[in-house]
Length: 388
Ligand SMILES: O=C([O-])CC(=O)C(=O)O
Ligand SMILES: [Mg+2]
Image (cartoon, rainbow, N blue to C red; front, side):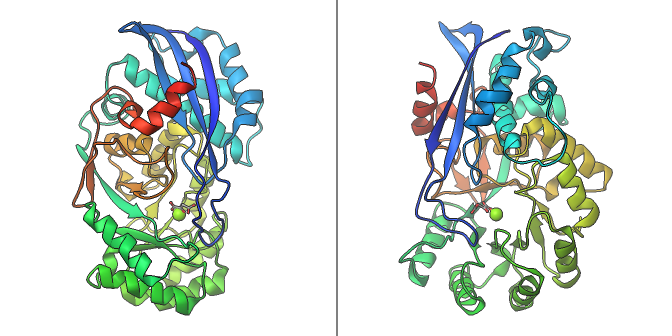
């Protein structure tokens, strides 16, 4: 197996939504096609990747550093002893001459390539990605469905409590039991009104509602909101302070008794380990949201899983950020606790196969080889145009 060509592009995933930190008016995303020399049914086998959401496209880093290193390498460097493509072998090649630390946008660029290589490797093995991964990195008995929660509840101009409730009812109608909304983009009294409006839709059951601060609060505000929302018994209180402020998180965990979730903006093994060492996260109730697409790919995520196991954390405490098909396969194969889903946002890249059905907040996997972008028509049309 040899890589014949790599094609990189950018798609807008912009919208009028806003969380407590950013709006999405100029959000975009890198997409990638890796064309192999293996031909099936008269066509080359192609792997596809993209960079989740929340970080912008990383084309400059891909074009100037990551892709040239991959393409300059001896093709055999990507193969295992059996001569099969091993995506994890690309990591050292792509990261040559990169200093440690400062894990930021280059982790996004590497993540895009890693996703495309795993899509390609599973296609070459003629397996859906979750089976490919379970056979190689799991116990060979993947979960046949994955818990998913519906993320939304953004701030949008003109959106009032009634519209917020309608959005949440729509999620329930689509088969979700657990929903997530943004907080921290208004003052406490307005956010409490918004939370109570959503709780009304959930029959008052706080354990079905997660709230997400997107890193906005200082310690005082984190604790003040924490005191106000603790009686609701929420599903989780997410990314409350700056993602790298481990002391803030640890102090919050001393005071807030309900589950805390964080990690979507930690992009490396080292940052994840610091969260576990210093962030006060509690293995009996809290959730870790590292997104394999943003954080150097599945290759790094596997290292993070190993680190978590060494620290006594179950993989079931992980529910990745991003709402994409890559993490859905990973969740089933590595027996994570679930995966995010955005039924209403981040198109065309986000979400699962067109025929995916959510029932009781669980979704099944696609059986087509690879990640299954081919079963997500509007996105696949965009990906295919990269190389056809
Ligand atoms: O609003 C965003 O950037 C997305 C986010 O935090 C999440 O999905 O948890
Ligand atoms: Mg979040």
